[in-house]
Image (cartoon, rainbow, N blue to C red; front, side, top):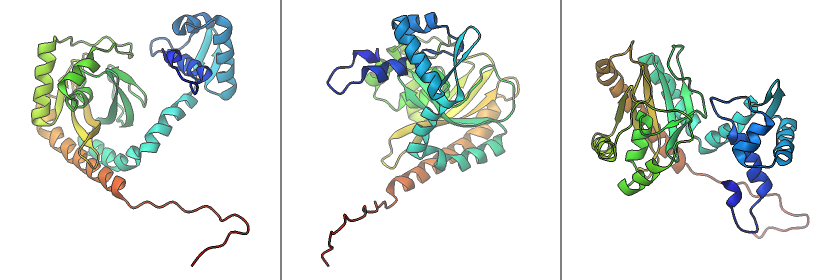
Length: 277
């Protein structure tokens, strides 16, 4: 738990507030005071004070039956995405890819044994699972996750996969170690990953890595399709080449962004200061 942090600079109140925010799950959007206290291990009076503080700040609102998060919570995640510059770089390429495939396309990063969606351009189609920025899925049964796990050293990938998922979703595919190790070896060898109804029925996708200027995999990009509408042949023969092109261009632009010259304007000189020529 975050409150197990040590050191004189650890702020327990902040840790408790973040725990309360992350206690809300996809299948439990409305939580009572008792629910929050139980999920976080906080005393009811403490949980109540935190919820009321978050309500005053606009991150939580009260409704019949308990408390719910507000869209303002997304500001916390969006701040991260904007700080990396990834969305500004990826957006035109995502839109280009969606226009040519007529499928939803997303970017995700690894967080423990889960992927978290950090950018997305979608098309209005009925799918089994709803996805938005911040949505979390188990990494292993997703194409996005396979790409990210394959970028890790084998021992590190095994450690990450052993961590419990915080997505609240039970996937269709439950491979043994030998099976997922073989899968990740194949992804490393060919440079992209595919999943066919392994996360949930009706969903198939293909993904490729996004790299920074040093070649390190920093995220993954996918094309997501409904199994009833898009065959594996179309996904791999038609969509995959476009995906690889978009992923390569995003990686190149991201590397350019990182290498761009950057200067910091000096602050104004204190009154009376002189400049030596």
